[in-house]
Image (cartoon, rainbow over all chains, first blue to last red; front, side, top):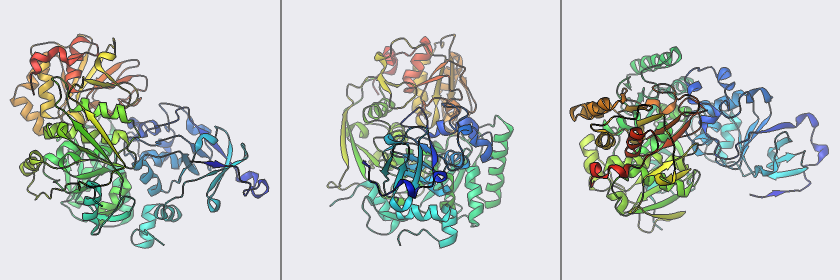
Length: 184
Length: 422
């Protein structure tokens, strides 16, 4: 994956208030769903708001207090590996994250997140540090990192996944189209 | 250009030719959920407002937290029972066993099937030439409602295992070794095809252990070609007609890896990652507080049998708790008949009901701070067994049993005479 320093997203195009905070956690790669939401909490409650308080509880307690709606979570390779628990993307979505940005995602987590309407973006996250102010610019397919003054290319999202996100999740997608929309 | 197992089986279920990279809609032969995922399945299913597509092709299993340790879990279990009654679908209740043992054992799957489960270790049935994979609850609900789902046809990695295992090494050691060499993300988005003389030499039960852990290197499928042992196994367990599928000799693979296991020593995955693997002799002095034998990885009859051979007429170390959870009611009963359960109880072990046991950290043996466990399970993530301040080591049933006798991680080759030639 490459990054570039093009200038097409100009500073003046970006409203300061549209920037959001990037949150990294200390473990870079292979953050599994047990770490996102431990098995002992997924059984103790079915209330997403309650679950969200336990996000990363075993590795970084109180993570939820750092996050404001619209913020981004930044990770390395293989984010969301391990168990199929949908409580993992559900709890992250409930925190109000705009998207999770990682170098790559584990496949079950990838499907689950899109199904619930949680956006996942793949790019070289070495160029995003904790606390950076960033913005996702969909029509340019980049992450604009104001703190570093760079744009980072995003791997294109498959058509079906794009439609699922636009429709607000897979159930909404199926209800709207009566089936999966695989192509335009 | 030839096709891989994934391309052939997905193509057969999509009703057209498919290649790696295609996104297709497939018919699914069987699907299920467990008690950790079913509440969200039922919720999503209700939102879809549909009927169950086929009452014989969906089941739910209470295994992860069974019997219930809390009011919250009991509520989930009750909701599952009510749903199963109302929709007239099969529910495996408390005491039946682990989903990944029950579903093949009770004949729901056979060669050539495409199966989805709301549990990441659904790849276990790959050993039976079944293309099976884990999905989340909403994906599963869609399949319960329609009998279908969308699939991206994955690229495949061929893993060729050759050689006959030495005494005291098992299929668990093979898969830990492979994951250690390849890494936790080696097969993300990909299908792994296990093949070679080292696989053919194994019993079907031993092969389940290998397919079970394919997801620990990120794989979507951990599938094997069928042989007479597999066909006999599925015919013994299922009335359904198997449709064996073989990969083409000129199939295109993203990668081919070869492993010779003829001198493989027992392997151990160290905390807190499954790919953090070493040979047992490299570990040094690691004291253990708890042993676990069971789970969807190693709770089968031959696993219990190996452990019993080591524990027979012996006592576990006075500072060690050993928890044994047979993978199903059928296995439990057979272990009683063969005297294995008596051996375990005499040795000082605690035998718990069929199910996931302490693997998921909700019940049946949660660890204290700074405690070390050695388990036959498939995951050793921090906190997995209920306490983020404890450490989990993964190994074969033989290594776990040998370690419980000494109170430290120990080489099962010390019991070679008892284990004999397999």
